[in-house]
Length: 232
View (cartoon, rainbow, N blue to C red):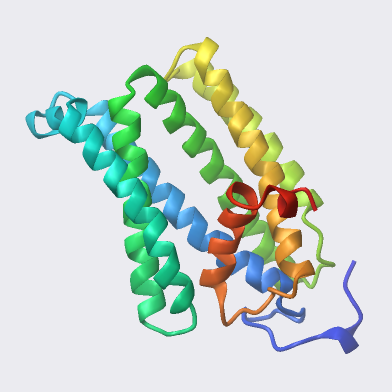
């Protein structure tokens, strides 16, 4: 159902008559989708091409050290990312670096942990399905002037996760069933995270389309660093 026209703010998306809620969700989760898809591409390349000589370093102690360092750098880069979140082009350059470090960490972890790493890779693939579906739904919500609610896209994300997981297990299981089940559980938990974080951003007045970068970092912080916020 469409909202009353008196509540309309300046939209970002062409054809959008709504305020900034759907616009913010669209931009934030579009960027998160790119981040996760980059991690999927990098992780898949390392996992399924582990025989390449230059990748053998990953399974050594120096490889583990590089993985830990990249994870620490990923955490550290969040600070300047928040500080320059409204300063273009630095915000997008820092976000690109942040995304590369994230993909690097995930990819190295997937390759280093071998069987468990394949489970991580499946989880990231399923999470990317969640964010892509939410991005597409948010685009439709903004253009179609829908009331803001994340229930429908989260149910859609849950359905797609389960369908894709079953398809992977039938036609090309990347990990054993006993471990891959944790991947689908992580993805379903991530669906809940997208619902909580998205609503929390809007509830706290973070529906400012001028600052999507800090909204993304906030989304991570809500789930990982501030569990009380995540619980609403």
